[in-house]
Image 1 (cartoon, rainbow, N blue to C red):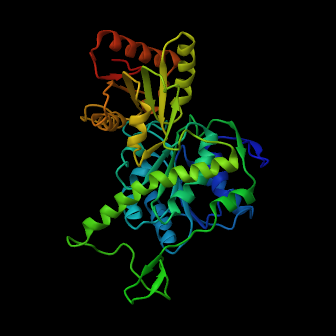
Image 2: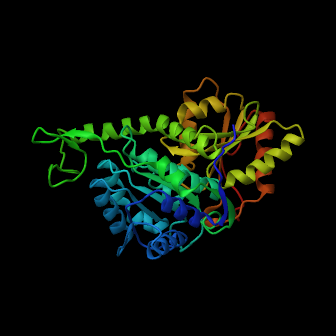
Image 3: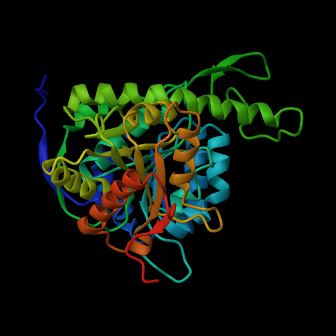
Length: 410
């Protein structure tokens, strides 16, 4: 059933799509520090503030570490907090990412994925967010600017759900999405505001024996992020893992509710299957690369090649059951990594997909293709070659080189 809500089509790049979604989501505070290719996000949002289009406190901090600290502090008082960063900025936040998730502060952050130095590179790969995959943040990777907009709106509902209460990062490929203009369908302000709603705080028992909202409040004093040594720390970490498990269903629920409003959906919210139902060979990837892969799949299907694509949308929490189910017919699988794990025998997505498939009933041949580091382009011809490699593996029943590099000058 098509949505009856009239939507406006705006020409936005990925960064502007983030800012517009945050603008509509009734954010209380944005604390940020500029870094390419993220700067447009907070720059645009600062214009909304200056023009009186939002009632948001905009805090210009002296670093990304401080930006996350400010968002954490605001979130623990019950405020809705948002920020954005990239690359070295995310790396500088490293300590505070763990603190934010450990304090169960539902901060939402957009990351315009960018390579890490040295040597200095300002273009897109997934090195920055992959380095933070165990920081306790939910990670959603978008394919295009439309999905960026939709994912940011959904992220506030996901993060603030009482069964989750974890921070969320929405990841968009630097320059490929952040700076590329696309048509984006945006919902009316009132519709987004109603969908996101008002942040609901869980009730907890204070040290005084009172039941109070879980926030810093002088009227009901409590400590957030206090010291927890050997006798309690382990239990806190276990609770974060349980929240991640809860997030799998919450992400789906929020996604499905949003689909009813917007008439847009992305697979089952966790993974998106493209011609995988009967595929014998398939690629797994994250982010904008999926658009190129889909084009190649269409051409191969026209040639009667049973090729498919599985795009992982939600990398944290990792959708284990969904990955196994989607790959039921696949006999040879290519996992594309836009990041490298030095000395780790393959990239991070490859590690995790092989780990998932270890306990599956069927075990396809799995090959890792590391590509696009530092923003290097990956062409449809190179994607097609990957599928040709998979066909050869099926013919020979042998993986000669399990880890390969796409478009690299050796």
